[in-house]
Length: 228
Image (spheres, one colour):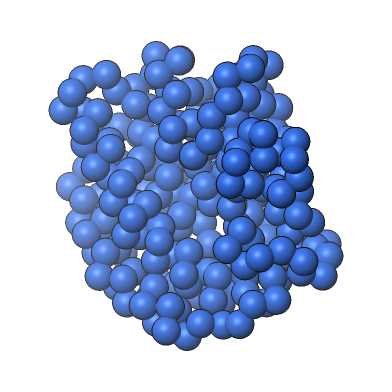
């Protein structure tokens, strides 16, 4: 049986789960509590040598990195979530990479230095926080313009790129990232968050974050591993 290893607070994990859910795949979600150090246990390191999330085991075929998992699952299912056409696939990859390298990396800095640093016993890095906010101001308008031209990021239909960006924007309210200046992102986000692939993971990221972190033990892990 397909198993997806992850942690609910990890945006990388949620991107992989969004795709699996959208494909209507039956899978077991194996929670790896990074806050409790479970990612560094030998049995998990045998699946993901860096001890991060997500990872996957499909009847003995093991894979890590969310993008690789998304592509594998979509290809296995023969789904247009990751299309076969050369140009169509390239456009999905383009927006998936843009979402990860520009929006995602910026959101990670903001989320960590507004919320997560306290949970893992780290110090707030105001330089990184300001850099993350500056990058969001630079790159979110590009995404908003694209979603003003098309209903979704690539090829006019939902793809793994949308799942990835949706996951990265999930902590926006929690991190006090104001998206009101981006109406097309707002329309796109509201529509996708009503879909079952999303609600099968959680109803609201901020609500889920607060519930889970309230149960966390005292920090005993390194800050870099906190969110996978």
